[in-house]
Image (cartoon, rainbow, N blue to C red; front, side):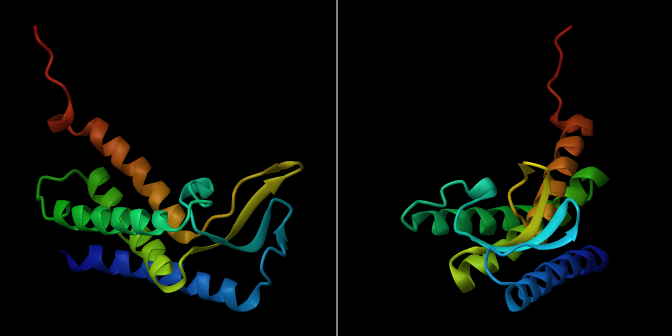
Length: 159
C-alpha cells in the first residue's frame, strides 16, 4: 500500500479513536452538551449497526458486524493494490478502512460502538454517530460514484 494512503487511513483512525476516548472521558452518558443550535455532543453506546439496527439482538450481532468490518477492511486493502483503480474508488476504499476498523476496535474493546455526534433541529433528531461512521458514509458515496464512472463496471449494451 502506498505510504500516503496509509497515512490518511492512520490519521482518520487516530482522530476517530481520540474523539471517542475524549467523549467517553468527558461526557456523561446520554446527557447532551450543546455545541451549536443544531449540534450536541451526546455520549451513547450502540450495540447495533447504523441507526441502531439490531441493537436489541442478544449479542450475536456483535460478531456479525465485526466480521463485516474485517471483511470490508481486507477487501478494501486488497482492492487498493489495483493500479487501474479510479481515484473515486481508491478514495472510497481509503475512507472505508479506518471507519470499519475504528468501529471494529470499539466492538472488541467494549462490546458496543461509542457514538457522540448528535445533530438536531427543533423536533427533528438524527441518530448519534461518530467519526468512523462519517468515514464509512463518505466511503459509500465515493465508491458509488467510482462504480458509476468506471467503465469496467458498466453493463455492455447490445447493438
